[in-house]
Amino acid sequence: MASESQLEKDFEKAVKQVNEHTETFPADFLLRLYAYYKHATGSQGKSPNSREPLINAFKTNALFQMKGLSREEAMEKYIKAANEYFKNLK
Image (cartoon, rainbow, N blue to C red):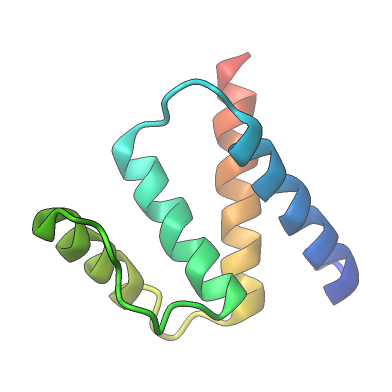
């Protein structure tokens, strides 16, 4: 496992890569990234605020599934998911 500072750098790099990607991501992938990101950044306590109730329900469920995951584990899972996605694009 990387040191926390290295883990945070790798997490920020993965977040930047995802944010700069211009093609559409699959919805299930985005939902996982959303939950990992919210948990990793400590912002999972805020309610989803989409205008669509169904989207809010999916987001709430994804956040609920993060229970028991540490902040570091959420970062690791975000990094792994992003890396695998971009590796498979090539």
